[in-house]
Length: 152
Image (cartoon, rainbow, N blue to C red; front, side):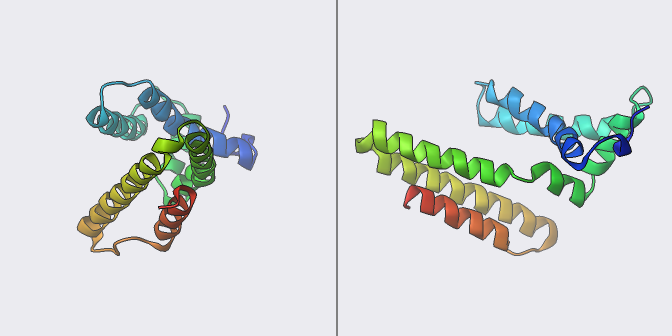
């Protein structure tokens, strides 16, 4: 039976990303709205938690869920997502500038506003949960890079 030791670090990272990517893929095809996206995210988290309790799941599933339940495992699964997202946003900005120059500034400002609101929601949730800081350094840096990409 396969365990974590059967995989390279790169392969293991892909296994850790896979449950999250399944959720992203499902959400990407969902036209039911934002609330549905949140509900789907919760369902993804619930499915991961339930896998730990399910006796029919195998050791590999348990190993992946064990890792995803740690801060290190979550960090590994998210590694590179920020860079990929910023690269996609740069492409979006270029498309807007080329194909919709009259709308580009307003659209980029709107995306910048979304980034502000998501960052505020994230920090508010953290503050409620732990009395933590408004934005951590990584969030501040990402928000600044998004603003730079969109010129907002």
